[in-house]
Image (cartoon, rainbow, N blue to C red):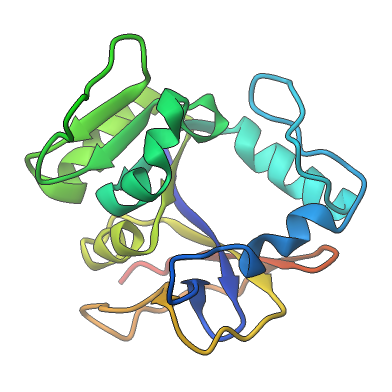
Length: 199
């Protein structure tokens, strides 16, 4: 069965973007090395990271079979120009379908009924035994609150933003306990993988 893993670059004080939705600071580690990340299709990303980061992300991305994102992430990215991250079929949780969508030939499905529960079910069906990746603060929070998340994969960056979009906010049923992390030290980033502890 597919494992559902949320993955985000996060500042040390818990923000995924600044007050203007800028993400430059939390992604500086993507330029602090000389090794590309291998994409699921075998191509190389434009990012240049440390070998430790490349090995870690290349392995994780190779195992991904579908992506879930929120409408805010979709809008801020301009719909990824119809080419979602990692080339994965992407399920966008939204109250409505934006004007001009869906577009023929694009691997994007809008989930307008049933919320994250429906999105996770559809993504798992698409992914089979592969990973379902979750991207975006709000949709990650919704998945945690619904008990649908198996792991949190955090790219912890050594910067303090002070304000902005907080990653793990608006949580219900706290405390949410996590297992001890798997830790991978990269250059300009520490990769932390936490399994969500089941009650």
